[in-house]
Image (cartoon, rainbow, N blue to C red; front, top):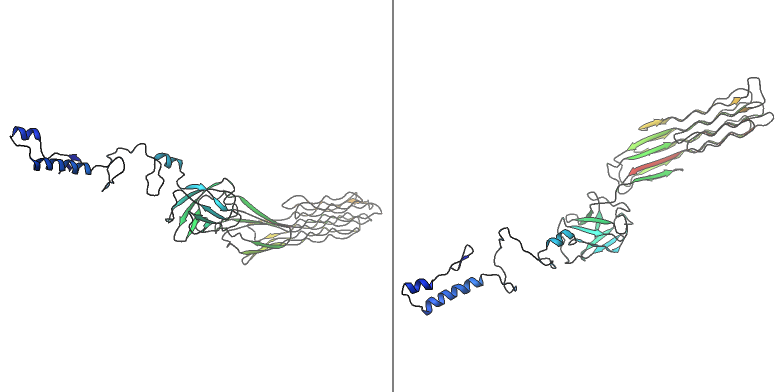
Length: 391
């Protein structure tokens, strides 16, 4: 046996044979030479002309100066590992039908395979696909199978990682773009559709603000119009909304200012959303009152909110002010009530129309009269419904 436990042992010793008087014979010579040949045949040739027949134990030593692997069955060197480019490449294809060919190209994609990709552009749909090394294109998802948000792959040169899920034949995006505040504003009635990539845990905040009341007009006989009341705001937090679900949105109209003379302002309109069986309401602001005499009319009442997580009443309009108790010649209109979004329209000085409110849901200002001249009240501001969420 030439090799035993990694050691080569000769079967004959010619010095010992000489001392023992044993002649050199063909059989002993052939046996010793055959033993050498057998030992050499157990060695790995440096020119690669033969191959190992069993696993090799390097005994804690290293292969050094190893070339870079180019085939799937090649060993890799530390430089290739540290560079991290074995499973990385620049995407080809289109923004929503991405392709990538690695070198060497793996054609059977194992479950859990991770691929690093440098994007050419942002995804423009919620269901882009990815094909690796010419394999079948599979949909890219996020968070366990949810559709992507547009821009989850942020754009050109963005680096992202995909992991293959063979059971569901899809690629999962491991690092979607950082979550950002999303929002929508309704200044008119409509429908809010829950985004396709919303999670059950996604928190939606609805601000529901009613329309502001109009300010009252002022007569020429000493009256002063009162300001309109502001619409209320209901702040409502919702979770568990199903992707694709719809929510009816109604936005309250603005109350019109009273026409010139002792004419009341009109009420605003209620704003509502309907979530399941619950209606959340930002109540309307009432129109300001008018008076044809020197009395001070009452301002419009602010609205009341219902079913919100937080309910904020609208501010009351202020009464108009005549110049003095004995003066029937004129007065100053009362300011409109303040809403969640800001103050109401200014009350007008003598002989001027009340100011229209600028802040959503605020009340209009009352008109101011002067001797022989009447004035109109200012319009309230329509309500608004806003929605905010983070995805």
